[in-house]
Image 1 (cartoon, rainbow, N blue to C red):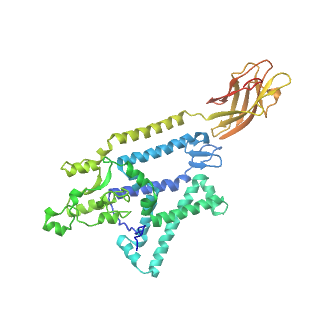
Image 2: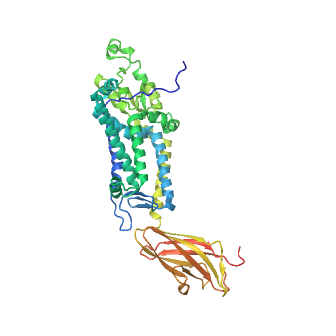
Length: 475
């Protein structure tokens, strides 16, 4: 018979451990989950004309709110800039400390870690869970599985529920959701995210990291001999042997006592002593486990540690151990940080200098002009006056660059009230579309000119939109 093309999945039961890296994982998990679940409920006063949710993706009105920042559709470059910063930030983290993103902050890692704590709460630590897996299906096992999966499902449901809160007013949507009055897409989104979170976090876990996620392959290509990674120092640990064997022949055995604690605590079931593997998410739990064992047996810590391949080669040759932080002081890290910082500074500058007034002009093309019976020429334009303030504002539209006698009027203003300027009231946080007509008196000619928009408030913001005036005989 031929061999299978697929490796059978193995359930990973990682052991509870305490140490600096485990405590850091706790901190990251609590902070990231708190941000995710709590953020939609934070209120932010933007006045009576804007929503009071601190972070809101308002698809209906095409706005993105984040505290005092409001992003409009035409300002999508801010979102693109933040996405670029996120990508370069991943490159920066990877070049500095390897797959730390995977080990601590990746959503799959965070929710898997949370579900593994549920496993320990219901089924006990590693050995107890392994025994329960092998045990027959008794009433006790069924009760434990039911309780555990119910907690999984509750966490998954609140995960999907929290996601939709970012796209509508959270208190209102919650009431409508439970009353059955929310939009169908809300229920569909919650159902999909509940199912994926329940399955990926509760059952697939490390298989997502090893087989499904493309990022480990990308990160592997970005690592080099100067990158900090979790490393087993084989020149110090080999040959492995128990304490009894080492006591009989100390020169023949290294510091590794082959206790397998590094494997037992690994959330993906990796044996770091076999070298770098795609399943290693560099969370550092094996370092906590190994340091604890080394302390118990009276040997120096660091048999498994964060180190670069260069540092390991130098240490194996007899050089003193180099502090891990020195690996961060290298050109690649500074280049990534410089690019990342420059993009961030540019976005902040653009955000700080942008105006809250915008004007776009579209001339009519069919017909391009109208020749009136008195010899005057009229053009029509569609003006879009954008008020990006959370309050209504009066805005003045003026003609610039046309001969004296040129006037304009709108659908709301009669021809008798035509003038070189018009004042238009624009509602808060809206784009007002105005149909405008521009007329040149007989004998005058125009070519390129501009509409100038000025906000009639203390800010006095301006925007200018250039366009053309079509006339008989013009191209």
